[in-house]
Length: 359
Image (cartoon, rainbow, N blue to C red):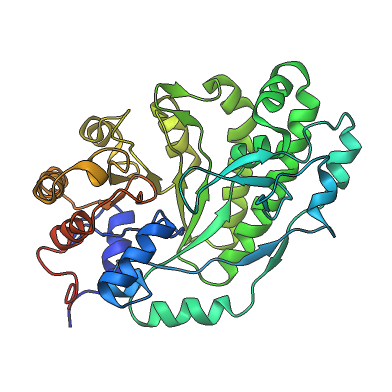
């Protein structure tokens, strides 16, 4: 029997030479297929689970969470039809892509009282039978990824981007109160997730745009970085073998050294539209596992199958010294992506056949 995906992955995160580069079509712990692509997958394969059909190197288990108050609509003066609410009571308007949503209704946008932030309901976490599911996947030889929260991104979702940025400069007490509220919950979610035995805690905190940072790096280091340190240190104390995955879109090269210093193990994506994977790998690849991320905006939806295969081959060659990378999409697989391109990516990632990969 060959090496298991979990053993191979453990070599990757230890920066030892792995037998192969792990592969997935997910985005960390989040499903990678948009709703139209999921329908296409079911139509083409007759299967309902991409993880199993494509034999990803990872499996995913995330704890259920829900709004901690009674009625999130009561937090908003007006609500548009079709808006859905997340665990923080943030209203999300359906976007232009089916299954995608925009953050549109921040519940703390108009508060002028720090006490209101303190009393704002914290989401409720439900572990359910997650531990048993995690153990089941691990017994089959798979590492398990699980969703574990956000800090910067959730903070501005609650307050609204414009107001939150103004707070950082003009009302630091309010900014700090919102960030602390969010970070406290993220710590609780991360710790409870780690207790289930999840191998990799996945955090999502988009700090970049395609031409630079959303937030000045100095402000990120002042407000966001210390809270991440507190969250990760708390998990490390109780669960020293747990690994940390950070998703942050955009051009975030300015803070990659900080991300490494904090102790994140995996960074996703190295977004092809704004960062050069080879350059970033040569600079930081010995200190953090970098996701070799195929462009979800350009190459994956609009390239040919052969261009997809060539990208995978060249990326594998670049990483061949240690195989310490992850082959995956830079973001959700968009509805325009042809089925043939998805197959080409999966087959090339698996050296010709994903169905019998890894024995």
